[in-house]
Image 1 (cartoon, rainbow, N blue to C red):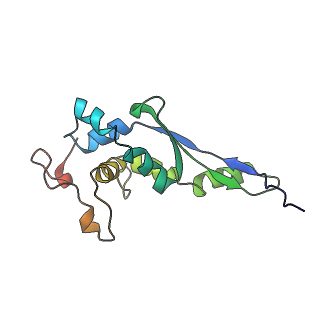
Image 2: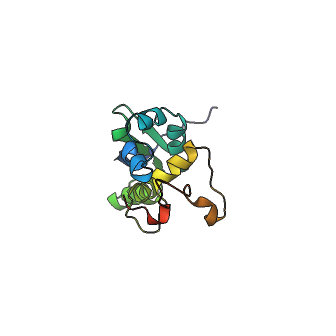
Image 3: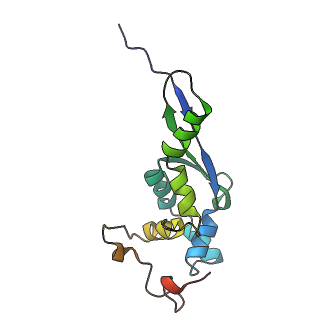
Length: 146
C-alpha cells in the first residue's frame, strides 16, 4: 500500500524590497546605466533565494522586488498565534526585513551583501574581512553617510 501524500498548511510572509535603492544607497559608484547593467547579474536573484530560503519575483523590476518566505505549519487546528509564530520564527522574513533596512542596529546591510556577492566577494568567519571596498569616492564605508 502506498503512503498517503502529506497535505498540510503553509504560511508565506512576503515583503517588497527596492533592490536598486538598496544597492545605490550602499554604493554610489553605481548610478544610472551602471546600475542597470549591474542588475542584469543573475547572482542577485540566486543570492536572495539562498540565505533567506525565498521565492523572488522581479515582474515589477528591481524597484519592487517581491520576496516570499514559506514555512510549513503543524497539522491540526491552529490558532492565530501559531500562524504568526510560524511566519515570524519559522522563516527568515524578519532577518530579511532587518537587513534591508539601513537603520536596523546590529543587522547586516542587504545592499552591501548583494554588492559583495555580485563582485565575487564572499563572507568569511573573520568580521574584519567583511569591510566594503577601502575607497568609495574618497570615503570609507565607516564614514559614508548617504
